[in-house]
Image 1 (tube, rainbow over the protein chains, first blue to last red):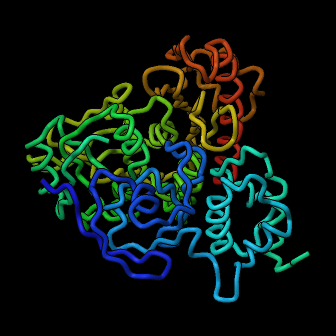
Image 2 (image 1 turned 180 degrees about the horizontal axis):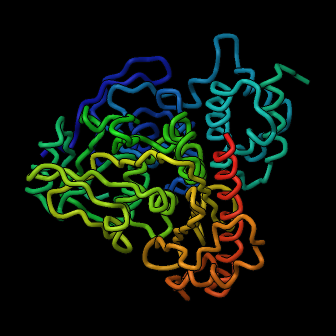
Length: 158
Length: 289
């Protein structure tokens, strides 16, 4: 019986060959096998969005998939957002707008917002709210988070 | 999660053989947004998990052929909602696909999985019933086509037999103008199971049908026998008795935490009237165009 499987994947631009347990989720592998702990574990039922990563251009809950399923795919985690010159414009906007309170949900919010802006560079407030509806913030910092995404979209830094 | 064997068949035949060999010890994996939760909570402890996503015949695809729009088993909600032909012919299906879970869930969850999981609250069930969808089932004896109304059986139960899997869901493209609309009731907007799911459809002769779920063991499709529900000249308030007849199969659970039976029954009327109005509006638009 195959308890582990070797998968080929690109994570944050780096090609990796990983031996993963077939009954581990992508979230388990990211955090426990390769130390990418920016992706958070929280509800583990797909309701909170803290574990959101971008797979082949779409945001997904890494708690709701087996790691073996990403064989051949391209994955971006929050660690992959930073640019050579520093934080991404979206990350900068989160800081400028005071959108990060306790910070726990922020990696997931950033990944959902990054995917939204890639698909829709000029979203309305309603589109931002829908795009981030799968991400809960227990500090209820939704207004600042929405403002930050808007600011990033407009390229405005205050 | 228990330890299981992970199988990655490359043909439908291989998947069918695995299902025949392992029976109840095997679980099919498409999007996994339901299955992975069941695995983690050990609600299911399969010996084999069969991942269908490496089978070329089941790859995400929406194809028009022989008067049908065929949606393959691994097509996800996002693809369905974004497809221009689904939008044109089956707007109520789009309305049900875009409210499933969240952006993250819709990027992963398949419509075939939504139906096979057998939840009474499955969002896509009512529009598939109204549109007379057909489920394409593969087994060792070949393929069979099952009307969606016969495919859906009860909570967690479908017409699938041992050794069978769904390869596609086909929707007959309406030959005459048709109006349909989907609506639902939830406690909050994002990531919630519906307390009511409802789809109304009206054909060019004004004949109406309504499918509704989350108020009984499965989603039910009921034809309007009064003939007045699809009549655009009759005001909504005069349709209440006919609506109540439509909802005779509703038996909402007392135990549900999402909504009380009384509330669900009262809201069925409201959602029914609302969906009918939208469906009639769409039909009228189609008739004049």
